[in-house]
Image (cartoon, rainbow, N blue to C red; front, side, top):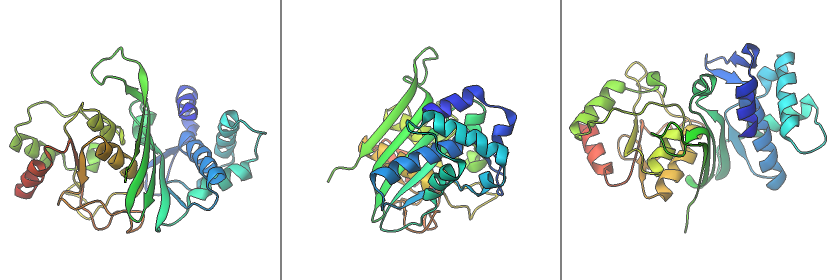
Length: 278
């Protein structure tokens, strides 16, 4: 989190580039992934990590790689490491989905990060398709959502015991809210921070439906795994729009699931019924 916060303060225009899918990636995305993958690799050397970023773009951009390496060394309490080593740490996240694996989004909500708005560092550990551990670091989230003077920076951790409007269907979200009698305006923000505010009771539900222009779109596992367990361990419920549990074993995208619904639990069946009628 400290690396991301520092990059946000010192960021220059060349610290962000566009990936092949036209989504942005920044020095902070790469640096965050490097440090987290290093920490997991040092503690659990045989564990598989499925992360969002690859070091390939860095290897093709010397100045960006230099910036990333500088930030990583600033926050790595060891002898300075080479750019090659930093790339190796990032690429520890190139694993594939299997029986046991970590999934990481080093910055969930990069556009929010670039606006100096909400974003999250999201990490989850999945065993046989079930999320067992989730961590959400939300550096810009106030302790109380509606208190502008509240301190910022929240960490959500859950262990299971034995705003991008173009991403979703805003019209459908509104009709569902009307069907449920919800009159409050929706809170729009980027990243899995939304799961965090549901878990602490500042929102009753979070709905994410595919944009009608892209009906076959399916969600990435790293965008939801950590948030799911944070909500569930707080007593809430998370499924897809059809009430089916999220399946994290179909690859990097949840091909068997359509959309996501996260609620405080009490509303869940009512939301699913409203979705079925919409």
